[in-house]
Amino acid sequence: MIRERRSREKLEAYYHRFIETGEINPNVHPWVARSWEKSAHLKVASDKMSTDNRLSDEEFNELQKQHQPAIDYLENISINVREFFQKYNISLLLLDAECTVLKSYSMPFYQMTPGEIEGVRVGIEDIGTSSISIAHEHKAPFWLFGPEMWAEECQQSDACSAPIIVDNQLAYIITLVAVEQTDMPQDAIIAMLLTVKQALEEHLQQYTRIKAQEAILDATPFAVYHVMAGDEVAYANKLGMSRLMGIGVQQKDNTVKTNLNDVIMNYRHTPIYRGFKGIPSYNKEVTWITQAKTYEDITTVVPLDYNMDNTVHSVVAVSMPIEDLRTLVAHAAGFTAKYSLNSLVSAGTNFASIKDKALRIARNKHHMLIQGEAGTGKQRMAHGIHQASPRAAGPLITIHCGDTTPEILEQELFGVSLNSEISHPGKLELASGGTLFIDEIEKMPRNIAVELAVALNTGQSNRIGENVERSIDVRIICACDSDLKRLTERGLFSRELYDIISRSVIRIPSLRNRREDIKDLAVHIITELANQHQMNKKEIADETVEMLTNYDWPGNIKQLQGVLEVAFFKTADGVIRPSDINLMGDVKPDNKWKEDKDIFVKAWKAAGGNVSRMANLLHVSRVTLYRYLKKYGFEKK
Image: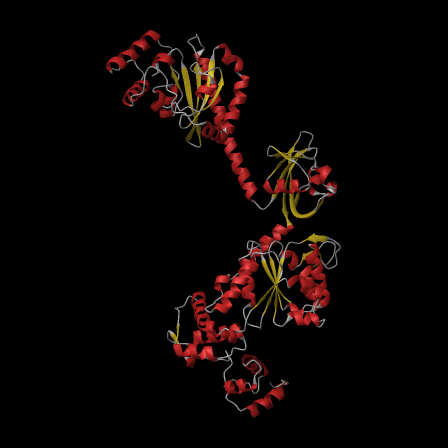
């Protein structure tokens, strides 16, 4: 608030009258009068200005760090107007929103050196009425004449303070103080204060926006660069900076100054170079060749700032590493662990010790092998190990060796280049940063297994039909239904790959060897089915549990799952009884297995290839069953 000059003698009289009698002269400014009354109520000493409320050196240094942008900005301003400050013996102060002095610029304040006033809180509770306290209370600029100051030792100097408002919140207070009474150009000082106020507010608003934009850019999975004419990088976000540092570029004061033409060997063939010719690029697959590493990205380049002669002043490049894009796609496609190790039921101590071993193995970096009969839960175990590993944030990709031809398996594993324009990554690349689960590894052809062993040892992979080596960072979890060591010794599996995956081995027992878990497994399966289909949970009768426990389960947990799923939907009430259980799953004795080979095969698998068990399940004699075994080409057991 701009105020006309007042008689210092009258102001002194008003002040002393209030100090002595508590009476307020009607000519005292209302804001000043209110502040005097508050100062008296707070019993603030009126003779001297207190500096007792001072931060420790450690606290003050930390506070200055928090407000460094504002401190530095005012430092630059004060340098430009230092002569004006010296001429009129003016000091500039910067205070935080709590009225703590952050910085004293130019001349001493209240005849104190900067070291004496910095770090001191000078709110109304500390020093009484001042232009600072009034500007703080009313959130408005205010000129206070010396005789209106609460502390008498400060009454030889006038002061003017203004609040710094950022995003509708008080952020700082700036103060101009005349150290001694002089004939000052009041209008010029107020104009300067308001100019500094506006400049600082705009700077802080812009700084806040820039920091927010930088935070957004740093959080994106893209490398962002602003490149100036002459190929100098003026800005890079966090990912961009890390990639530049990865090729030897030095960072200084959160900025990077490097000429791309010096570090990118094929720079003249990149979209950035074409961008300076006014040619934009959108989502182009680009190879960046440097001395340290070759990068493959999806890149967009937009030319900016055309000069008067229609030349490009700068370009913005947005680039996403292809390996990161594959990880995002992998997550979007659901390539994540569906099960944890906790979801593996272990009522008995036998399987509990296997889970403990799995947890230990999950935390190391070794490739590993899971062995066990079909249906024992090897895939669920692999999911749990991935989720418990340091790679849990990466993708979990699965490949089945027994589902396809050797040619397709090789392409699916390593990728394939169809021509110079079309090249597809394999699952080995897609799983980079995560885990590749290879099921039925024993069915992998020897030549492909050898090729995989080389890739794992070197950390490099080649797509079929290409000579380009790509870095891979993947952990392999293999599953095998048979004894892989014996197959290797017989020369039926690659020794090179076996040595890599056999450093950590987990053997999952068959269900018939962990009967103590069957009851809990059955309850767990029924609970999962109820949750999955949003149905009421069903109970399992004790006699049903006994029936399930006494069965050998040749198909292991997978067979138990199928049997209970049929029973869950078949049971009319909330209890699953023995009559609801068909140990052959969806194959019934009255099915036309005599005419339908597919039904017969299902029954044969359900019985585990055991003639006596199958004869009992189908309610036929062994002689009859032998006849149909011969008909369908099965060997009896």
